[in-house]
Amino acid sequence: MTGYLASLCGGLLIGLSAISYLILTGRIAGISGIVGRLAGGHAVFVNGAFVIGLVIGPFLYAQAFGAWPTVTLVASTPLLVLAGLLVGIGARMGSGCTSGHGVLGLARLSPRSMVAVATFLASGIATVTLLRIIG
Amino acid sequence: MSIDLRQPLAALGCGALFAFGLSLSGMLDPARVKAFLDLFGAWDPSLAFVLGGAVSVAMAGMVLVRSMARPVLDESFQIPQSRVIDRPLVLGSAVFGIGWGLGGICPGPALAALSLGLMPVAVCVLAMIAGMVIHDRFLSGRV
Image (cartoon, rainbow over all chains, first blue to last red; front, side):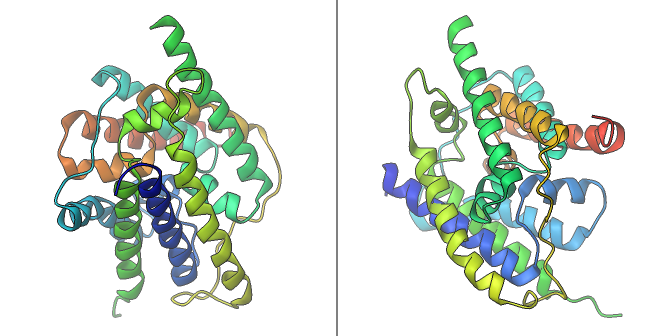
């Protein structure tokens, strides 16, 4: 399965995961929240298990489809460090990222999440456009 | 005291399903994510299909959530109730977007991509965790 259909099906599974986590544990499956709480030593078992699951997922995909998902790095390692720092700081400051705000926040019609998604889409597009101009 | 393993097991399963979905969607690939943000260049709309699919399922599931008095494995739902658009929300999201655009990575795909064993991804994840800790220790409540 390739192209937009694969993207749509993958998205459906992501949504199923996020809503299942909410129905089962009562918590929002926001990855930055889960990792941040884990780094802060809160609810280590549950948050740690989610992160281990995240790392296992692509293994299961490789088993099912006979090939690993493609990962093409688009930045040098120093730039990836800067990107990682900004993503980490920004996600915690903004109380969420593409999963918490993007998936569940929009599904809940949360006004905060709508503003967050519009803001990080705008600054992401601005950043890539700027890179295109100066690159 | 016995440790209730049901919540960690639920988290493990949901995490695996989440990353399986990410893998299928193509969004483990920073090049595809960056191409979505390259609106004025070689735009790839795939991420919109991913987000659309995910939000549709989650929105349908929210109907069930609203009918439940409590989650299956805990006493109460912990859903954010704030509706205040404040400075940390906007500034943080803007900073997040810059990092997202620079590297084509965000927390979920970055962690899932660790399974491929690429050193730059691991370094990026460490930087991301460092960023979270820096925020929680030094910046939280000061923006």
